[in-house]
Amino acid sequence: MSQPAPELRAGRWIDSNGIETKPLKLTDLGDGFKIIYCFQHWCAGCHSGGFPALIALHAALKEKGFGFAVIQTVFEGFEENTFDKLRATQERYGLALPFGHDVPDEAAPVSTFMRDYRTGGTPWFTVIDPSGGILYADFHIDPARFLQALSSTT
Image (cartoon, rainbow, N blue to C red; front, side, top):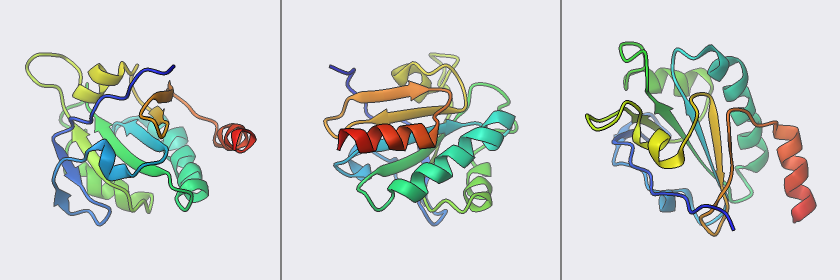
């Protein structure tokens, strides 16, 4: 049995068109599998490896009932990893997906997603199964291996 996925608590979001919107909830991503990608704007690994992996997964799975969200989980570089960078990042990669901005509150040094999901930093991929359990959580994901594993279980 997998650990249940906590509800998202990131406070600020833009929708797939770059318009600021209400905070996203897991149910907004549909009833199927969900893939959440965490990044920081200034994270070189997020841009060199994380976003290309996300793009590959999104291209392969967007028509198969998978829900996707991207969250900037800020834990350092607060002057660079800002809300206004979300739209530029969304456009840079051509990702018509919701993007969230999650900063630490006064109670903790890391963002709510990092605390709730016990992430280790960025880039970070979380895959949630249709029953709401965390299926995968790690710094990297190999899209080809993930898709192969997925096809062998269906």
